[in-house]
Image 1 (cartoon, each protein chain N blue to C red):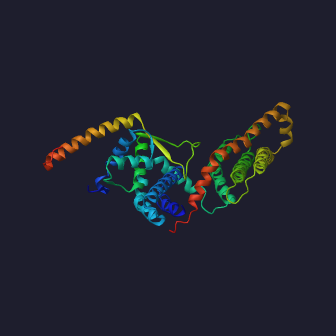
Image 2: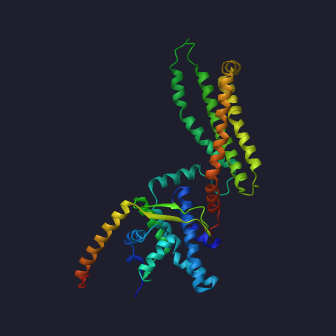
Image 3: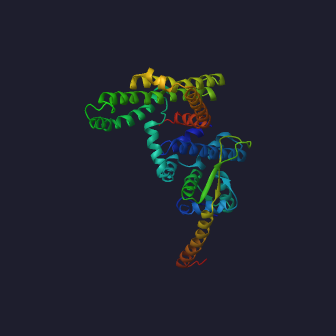
Length: 255
Length: 114
């Protein structure tokens, strides 16, 4: 099977398309190649001859790459570009991948810096109701630090959760670990949120007095419950595809 | 019979795939089997080339596809099952008319009318 996977991967890897499209191509072509092999094996009753015939019938992977590329839609090309920048790369650690992912909100927040500075410039002197430039920059700095941080933490948790859920990449399959990681994700928003308010807005005690009511606490808890639930659902749905993609993309095709 | 391959097939593969799917939904290997059977073994196609043709047909909305039923027993990787859309049926009918006209015109030129 590995020889067939390499042949398929030689045809598919150079195609400029998103991970879902590439995985679909890989699986379909591999299923076809294996079906040809099975048919030839029944006909020839010789493993190596059947293998050679299956490869011949399948065709030249270089020609196939060009044909596959022509069949790709424009949105798949955009997917490919986004994946090249923000997708997982073979051999990349979870931490490095999550850090790259966290760069995206950082860049988005940074692009709003001129707007924040201009807004601060409009403040009339001695206007006690409007935030000062220092206040705005402090808030801005808080968002700049904590938005990427939350992305990093949630990405790390989801990767570890996926590996534990499916026993992938050397991790032991453990639902206990999945539940533990989901519990950690439940804490991520309140803890990082409190830190954000403390760093960006100061006066956390006043805010806590104003916001800490029974209703707000219950509402927050119910709201935060969605974080682990969503994360588990996301990992359950997307995990197998990510694992398959990683297996294919890590295949040594000798090129 | 001399095998028909490469350039002679190019341009017709998509219509032939539509015709194959007219018999009912099928995955790629089955589509090829139907084509080979219908062509009495005279078609020589690099089989990987069928899939780009299927993707182009799907992109044009002439066919749709889904992964085969996960609960059904299977060996090896998943297969994707294709089926004709209403637009695909219309395109196939138009393809047949075009083909008959092509054969008629070229046949007349070659002195071998259909």
